[in-house]
Amino acid sequence: MGTAAAAAAAAGEGRSPSPAAVSLGLGVAVVSSLVNGSTFVLQKKGIVRAKRRGTSYLTDIVWWAGTIAMAVGQIGNFLAYTAVPTVLVTPLGALGVPFGSILASYLLKEKLNILGKLGCLLSCAGSVVLIIHSPKSESVTTQAELEEKLTNPVFVGYLCIVLLMLLLLIFWIAPAHGPTNIMVYISICSLLGSFTVPSTKGIGLAAQDILHNNPSSQRALCLCLVLLAVLGCSIIVQFRYINKALECFDSSVFGAIYYVVFTTLVLLASAILFREWSNVGLVDFLGMACGFTTVSVGIVLIQVFKEFNFNLGEMNKSNMKTD
Image 1 (cartoon, rainbow, N blue to C red):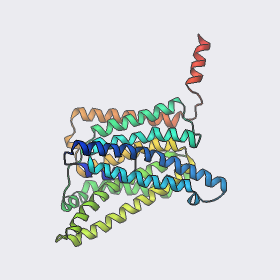
Image 2 (image 1 turned 120 degrees about the horizontal axis):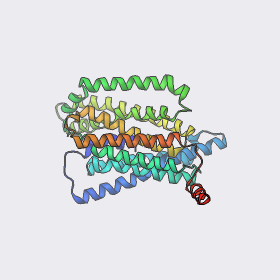
Image 3 (image 1 turned 90 degrees about the vertical axis):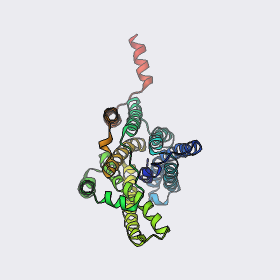
Image 4 (image 1 turned 45 degrees about the vertical axis):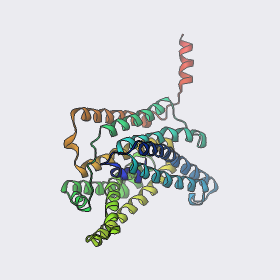
């Protein structure tokens, strides 16, 4: 689950990889998912340690270990996307959510009751169903094709709406409600995913023209610099609000909800950019509806019932007394 991972989705489309490439790509994706699942926990641990010492978390080695793990995980996901199709790699990001919860229970002593654990499982399962049945990105192989899609009025309108929502969240809602409502910080980070998909794809296509010294290399260089700036700003803002969220909320809860919302919004942005909704059949439409419903139920279980103090042991004792 991360910025470069979701943004590099188009890299694996449009070709049939060999079995060896599929095995290698899936292996890298599994390892990257587990690494990504540990990043929030390590960063949260570093923040807690720094607070106890009364220093900045930037001086804590555990926080830096989590930050480096995040970078390694994103690089691994990017490599996996170049080896196998998106539909085989992206669902594996769900593996990081339960792994992060288990790790948090040991390092941070965070506890999820049985409903919270069930919510994590349902959120991951719903996201996998949603991704499998989502529209598949068409292949964009030239800079001209991408420029045409980036200037499409529908996509431009969508980006304007995202920008307005981000401004509202960052400058008005986050200062007042961010520390008490986990969805504020998650919404900011997830909405920025709408910029990472076209930015990463455009950087790759522009880089090809620059390296091959094509007649349009000067224009490609300008486009590459603009997209690099957009991608860099998105990553910096995401990084800031991820750490703000980890200062206020459990890493396991944050990781589960962030994965679901980020994946959903990236899929939406990709679908609008590449206009694949017209190719969705009835089975895929029903699959996406079931995926959204499952995700929604999972989030409710994680958020609404996280303060309930009960577990399977107590339920078994209650049943024994009743008998």
